[in-house]
Length: 172
Image (cartoon, rainbow, N blue to C red; front, side, top):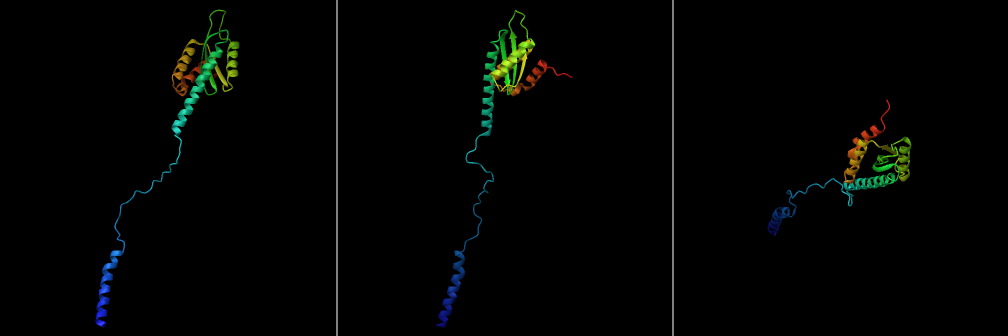
């Protein structure tokens, strides 16, 4: 029996040598998944471009509505025939066409009256520029028409600065 036992042990030994490695995990490269993105995306993130555009459009619409309201009010002044107003933030540019006759001209008294009327109508406005110069009034009318058509007032910043300089030249 010892020979049988030795044979049995040898067979078991051979089986274990060949059988057990099959049970071990084979180490083969498997499919590789890309590493997770490091970008953190919040679940709900407002479209900031849309938000900024909406704010800009709302501000433009408010300024445009205020400009029209102010122009209507300035037209109620006896000496004024037509008025155009452009509003940008806390500034307003007022161009007036004065009625003919009765010596109507833009005096300091009339200019002050228009400035005060604009400031009373809107506590938002702190600076008012008033002119009756035909060229400047035409430029203001063109700017107001372009803004009403949807162009941003920021596109007219240089022109408004030029108009301001013409209305109130800098003293050197």
